[in-house]
Length: 419
Image (cartoon, rainbow, N blue to C red; front, side, top):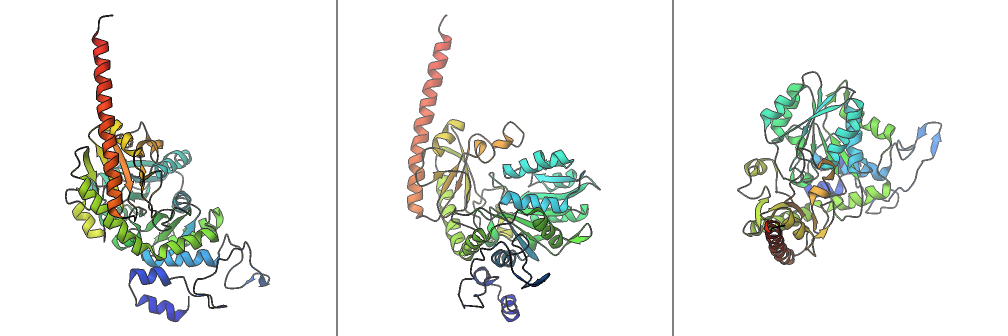
């Protein structure tokens, strides 16, 4: 990026302007409006270790990846961004950058099952312990800190899949008191909805597979860090070294797709948010549903906090059913436009039975997801069509619950008969 243009962007705070232009200069050789994909593994040197524009080998740097990293860092307000092959690869690289054997993590209890699996089952074998906490209870967060051992506080807000809201500023204060690093998983919100670094977080992680890519056609992850020194080095230096040394980098084609998706993030998120809020308000009045979990609803316990630290309320809605597991399963398997699948954040709507899909790794533990819960990733289709699809699925729920009641009555009658 030219110095003049970089200075211009610094004076232009608009989100969509940054999304389109930061790190995305037209090609200086041909004038192509869209930067080319640098599909190369290595770069010619002008002499031994005399590098053109600093590029040697694509694991270390690649113009396509670097452009995307600059673009994302500009939207999160970070000092530097780093792209990885998946969201879990990004989390792993960040944790390797921060942790030493014997360290302790304060871990939000309600979060992605894969994150819990990584921290508990992989890092646990290397002497890293963790304490799960209620992300909404700052006193519990503070009490979980182990002085001299706690290196990381990790929270996902809104959480997956219960959509609890954590006070990022409060978590940051606890992290500072402990001399620890606060990491916020911002995947559910996206930088359009929330920028955790503004509230004191030290690092943000994303599965760029989700809202940033936005079209369910690319796998990726990212870390964006603040200008913070931890254990004698900046977070940017620590994560940059791990990215190069560990090598789980995002490829140029994946970075191109993620960068392309990022350019329309603001437009897409406005529609995701509008559709989700409309459906959440309607679902609140459906008798089959016992609870609608969505921070945009005034009755949500985190609504006031969400209004303070989020510009919108997100595109994810979770539902709990009066008919329990039978109803939740019937609903998840009865939609048409809402495709039954893991993942989220694409333009198409998805539905997920979290207990056995995204959070299967915590089944049978205190962190298990309720069996009566279904998670909706609300897409950008016409809201009326999505509403009709959910209404059809609710009819299937009524039939499934009635059948279950008949079977239960029949079984109880059979048990009461003399042998």
